[in-house]
Length: 412
Image 1 (cartoon, rainbow, N blue to C red):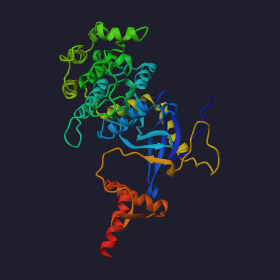
Image 2: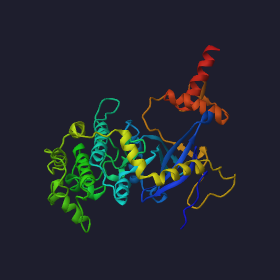
Image 3: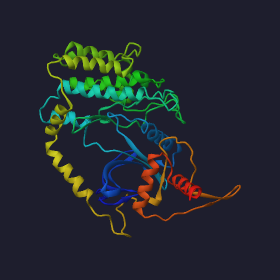
Image 4: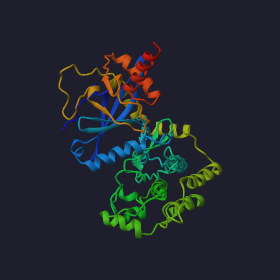
């Protein structure tokens, strides 16, 4: 069936530009957020598929994903901006990265007859280590460790922007010790071929599981050989837990000894012998790169990607400009099939962070034990200005209005 043209359709306070992908879990949209004085930001919206919204366990996992990821503010991790519910459908709004994931980058280079440079693979892995270390060490506001484990470090979740910045995507199946709903014992999640041995066995995971997965990814990038394969899921799992891991020089003789050491340490099936932290692995990667004949910068990586995807860059920029500038559908016009067009009033925001309670609306006391609700009619521009002020003070808009009115009554 032909994909619906959604350019210009409203989705609450966002304007949809294009539908990027549809998976079993969610639909992914490219969208634009608009604000005061011509402010615009290109973002990505991830919306739960309608048939999953009735499954409470799945919805809770989705909410945990957003709330957890919103606590991760690091240059190497994709940022979460917003979480909300439209009728019965939940969504998150996240950072848009102008670039490609590694699942597309490596085959693109191979298709052009260009071996992916080892030093670029090591640099990307170093940046992934930096983002993972930040997430692994993250604590809550009281200093308690969150014990975050990504659990899905795969090529498709490692994104490289066209300016050379590396980003980790999708902490969607990450697990924190304070999650309301813990993963059921023995339940296996993630992409099979990149799992750690302990993950295959459904055992409790820690940060060392992510480092094994990163080792699998890096091994594949450097040798061109996929480490764990099989005819079915059982065969893949058995390969991970019981199969022999050959040194990368077995497939590619020119792999430096130091790089081979890094890979084999990351891939040790005994996690006590593996790298214990992402910082340790990053240190070894950076030490090698600093002493190698060529140490790539973000600019080098940027130029390499732009050359690889030169045939796609202009087309993508044109899509953002042309489709993003499309006018919204006239009022009353039906939306394309599969797209639900909603107004701001339909969106129920869900707090991403715990905030100190300051009241839940603009209320004016009229006597002991009683109150009346004050309703204000604001135009869109004034409301956005008020909302921006409330956000800076970590307050609900209604609570801010309540404090302003109360202060005026005290000091008038």
